[in-house]
Image (cartoon, rainbow, N blue to C red; front, side):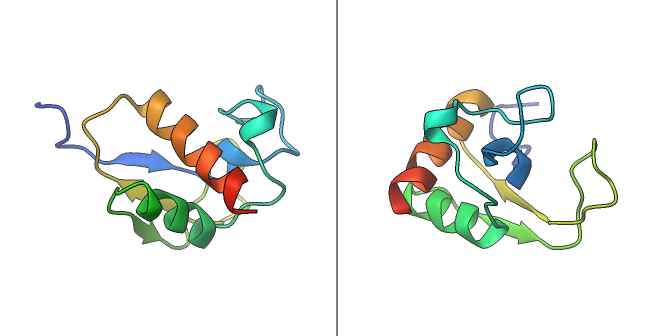
Amino acid sequence: MPKGDRPIVLYPAYFDAARSRAEGRRVPKKASVDSPTVEQIAAAAKALGLQPTIEEGKAFPSSPWKREGRVLVRADYYKTSVVKKVGERLRASR
């Protein structure tokens, strides 16, 4: 499957400063924020030129009872670099 065919999934847990790395945070503390929403993540992704799509009612796999939603983006970059850039942009917007 060529790069860019599958969307990159971004959960709010990836950017939540209250979570540890073991609990799902994927960005450094300096790029994380308190209680991010899918709308804020989508706005940060859009500012980076990605085309975000919000999916409501989806849950982060390690906490299925908390249905915060998720953001899907398409990019020709690795997921780790996309997550870090979105986290930095999200932090700068607050």
